[in-house]
Length: 409
Image 1 (cartoon, rainbow, N blue to C red):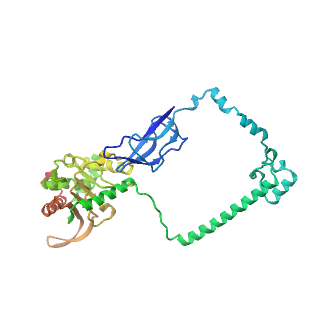
Image 2: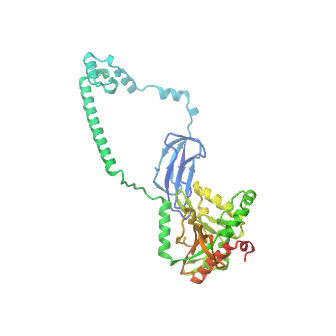
Image 3: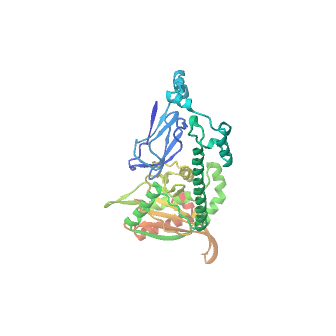
């Protein structure tokens, strides 16, 4: 009995997908729920498990093929060794008339001693193993013509190998320092390129900057970080402070939390924050929902879970759908300053950067403080300078005095 392997039902926003990787070959034994093939969409990678135990009998769509929902990918045969009867085995092993005829005229010429004196002498002169020569004589005996034919083939093969070796040597010398490799873009990379180009072409994007003294947050993490980790089982990072500050600033400036839909402006009364995460497949922006209702520990746990899912390729379409505002932290890669690109249909994105010790003026004195640049890119069609600068200053003030995050002032 055979069972069909079908493409999973794709989300409504996804028209088709690409066969990314087959983990089994035809003839391999598979176990129920074992991952057979991975299907790549514009956003996520879907795993297709084996519906039953058996043997992979057929692959209908090879790697790189484009497939749609419920399309046939391959077939599994569920016939096991125990399903064969003795009669079946007997029939399978019984020789056919053609087999018997072939066996009657077959002759074992793999041993030089079984050949005639003249053939043995030729084999010895040319240092040829008898089993390498296909005999065309009676009963499969080797003839003089067989040896001459073998020598001619061997000469051609040696010539080709010599030419290939020479060509490879020249190529290595000439091109070892200059090479190219062309690979097709993944569906995710294509989608990222489309989205970034869309943002540049359809929004009036502008970026405003500020800087924040991170000393208060760093002191807070140093004082309570160990106790926080023991109590909640997760480290106290910077991102939870960033998200809390952003949520409070969004409450004060609702235009930043809005989006344009045709000729309308849609104001969102909830706070779903997208965070940019670098994965082996590329940049994705999973969403942390209802951030205004989450504690610092809840936020850190959610970030850790999403990061692990992104690293393992387990993010779902639901994880990546929605979001009213995005935070990207290029500082983890050492970026000092950047102009992040808006993630449509959102209207703004906040870029955090590397924290560096710099001399700053504090109360008329030059002191060394851990400083970080903030960059807010926004859609000027919806957000004016007053709102964008006010929002960024609010984030700065909240981060420089994190106790205000608890008091919501």
